Amino acid sequence: MDKEMSYGKDYKFIPATSLSSGVGLDVLSDLYFHTIQIVNIVLIGKPNSDHFVLVDAGMPLSADEIISTIEKRFGANKKPQAILLTHGHFDHVGAIIELLETWGDIPVYAHELEIPFLTGKMNYPDPDPTVEGGMVSKMSAYFPNEAINLGNKVEVLPADGSVPFLPEFHWIHTPGHTPGHVSFFRERDRALIAGDAFITVKQEYLAKVIMQEQEISGPPRYLTPDWNAAWESVKKLEALKPIVAVTGHGLPMKGDLLSESLARLASEFDKIAIPEHGKYVDGNLH
Image 1 (cartoon, rainbow, N blue to C red):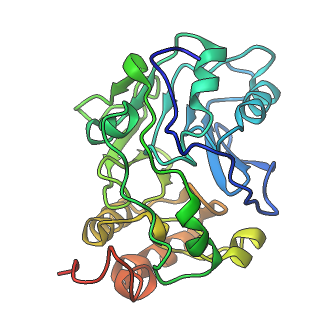
Image 2 (image 1 turned 180 degrees about the vertical axis):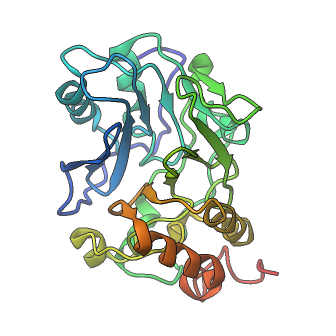
């Protein structure tokens, strides 16, 4: 590996999966998602094009699957123009070093507030296995949270909200799950890539994760330290009135189901998303 790049000492394979693992779907003609175990990557670009980007970088040890998925969609030896990160949690950057080693000099972009977690300077808060939820919440004590170090490979997203290589998209700061979490939105067709600002599966419950039972939910509870900011982020995204949303976990959601579900989440976030107990909840809400 590049001497400048390294994963945290707690980096490891996580033996969790879902029935959707290995499955991909065209959400729009140039918007494709693929599930790796329990998390989604997103590819933006027309099939067989040289002009496409990758959003997020999957679970640990998933580089071969990501590369294979890209080559099936875009052609042999194709590589994205850039990797965009919604945030730096282990399940969204799990294969990024191997991908960068394979593809060479392609840029990685993230929000300025996420850079310390991507350059080895700051660890994320510990996961909370005591938070309200099911088996995945309890398993979260074993999830990696130490910072990875991408050195000078990671760049700050442009301050004007534009997205490199995607002129029709703009990025939106959606903190709460992490300080520098971002989402991506295209006005033309109201397409939203939400990351973990909200998701479409109750990620804390193993049975629902395995079955990918679709329902609107807030960010994963066991790794969300700022619930006030998370609620404001959902309100911000709901105000965009997206027509289609691809989230970091769960199946894409469209049309009336999305608009009605997201409106309900924005208005009833305290009932739907915020856990009744947990170390990042108790005494921290106002």
